[in-house]
Amino acid sequence: MANGTIAFDTLSTSGQISGTAKSVDTDYVVNGSAKVWIDFAGDGTSINDSFNIASLTDTATGDYTPNFSSSMSSANYAITTSGALRPSDSGLCIVLQIRNLLGVPTSKTTSAIRIDGKRSDSATHLDIGTGCASINGDLA
Image 1 (tube, rainbow, N blue to C red):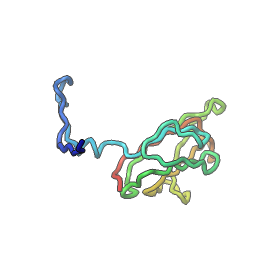
Image 2: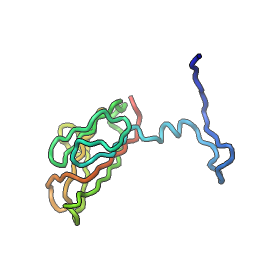
Image 3: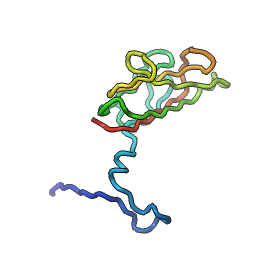
Image 4: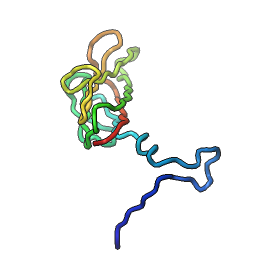
């Protein structure tokens, strides 16, 4: 049995979708897809589900480092984060802040990000119930 390659530039539907969105350029699909995403438990050791994540390190209280399986081409990528509180922390707003591996806010590397959970009313680090991050950009 021989293996082969299928090459195409446009994906099209057979007519089951109504409206004008019946085809899409494959570059749009590749460039518009998340290259890394993670859903993890705030204990910092449990990855609920992920894509392109090699490991998750619990660096300290409320401080998490998801490490990528495949690196990004540069640190110029977009990150979206969200988190949920633990039941014992009801009434608090959580702030998920991105840091680089040296702890500098808002910086990123090509191989990992660092996520901090903090209380909205102080600089106190706080373990979260669950956290999520999604990264869009180009893989190396």
